[in-house]
Image 1 (cartoon, rainbow, N blue to C red):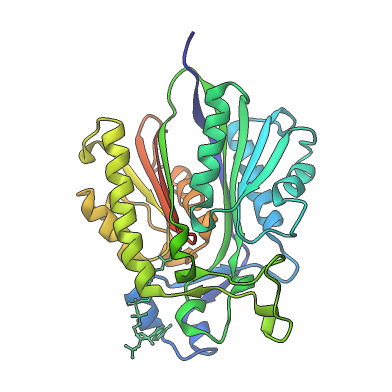
Image 2: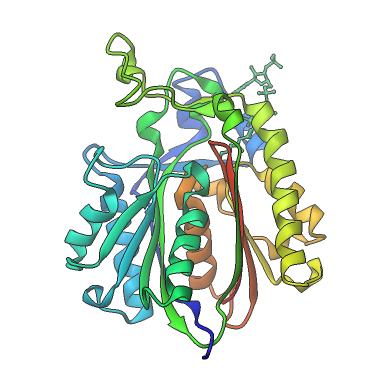
Amino acid sequence: MTQVFSRIAGTGSYLPEKVLTNDDLSKIVDTSDEWIRTRTGIRERHVAAEGETTSDLAYHASVRALEAAGVDAKDLDLIVLGTTTPDLIFPSTACLLQHRLGADGCAAFDVNAACSGFIFALTVADKFIRSGAAKTVLVVGSETLTRMVDWTERTSCVLFGDGAGAVVLKADSEAGILSTHLHADGGKKELLWNPVGVSVGFKPEEPNCGVRINMSGNDVFKYAVKALDSVVEETLEANGLDRHDIDWLIPHQANLRIIEATAKRLDMPMDRVIVTVDRHGNTSSGSVPLALDEAVRSGKIQRGQLLLLEAFGGGFTWGAALLRY
Ligand code: UT7
């Protein structure tokens, strides 16, 4: 029996129109363009308009990915959507997206792995294809993270932005996705979390009912660098590859200094690393597919090249995917 792999047939992404620069932020909180750029590499980020939701961003990114793949939404067997900022508690954002795309009937669900959401969603989709349970899958990472930002808190509000990316995966006899590697450590939940919810309860006395990102930036930074180092090693080892075999690193875009640390570990010059954090900020699940799509459309990434995708986020969660584009 021939082995089945999943291949990326097309990519797409979408950013909301409104741009918020560092200078704009310095008018709201006690910060500066200089501090934000030197500590994070971020210059600006996109912010969803009032009423514009995670499923709206997902829809635009998905339409572009389907077009690029030459796939009709009706032919999708599955939609897996990574998000930590769903439109509603339920139905899932994947179900809302499915209906808008006109793909009613196929399976559709969300994956919440915070900033690692896209890598987790991609892994699930890959397993469905490898097992023969699906042939054509839409994988999305979409977020409106600015909806849970406390705009009075300078340590976190400067970091995040909104956006979405999507890929269409198709079953193929040639790889494709070579391997994926996922991890989590729930013991560190309080270092990066949003501490309210349906079951725990909301805090009506607090702004936004207590919905806000809490982060111990420094601790997250150190843990993220180590975790990403280790998952990148694990991925290379699992495939019997040398770090010099990778053509492009497509990292989660949280902080340029974290990205540079991973690139250094791989001995990769920064011109082989896709960087969008300067213009997008941290878009959580949206960041890796946004970076991938931008690099594909700009002509940087070519068919046949070896790509290493990685992400780290709240949970903690982290993971990597190695694929031949
Ligand atoms: O996507 C999920 C994963 N998330 C991440 O990977 C984020 C990881 N963490 C980070 O990227 C960095 O830790 C931050 C960018 C969040 C912070 O950078 P840092 O170099 O770790 O700064 P720090 O938190 O140690 O703060 C240094 C100083 C403090 O002042 P003092 O105590 O030295 O006087 C902060 O109060 O910078 C101050 N500060 C700011 N100053 C101006 C913190 N935020 C700001 C700000 N503007 N926005």
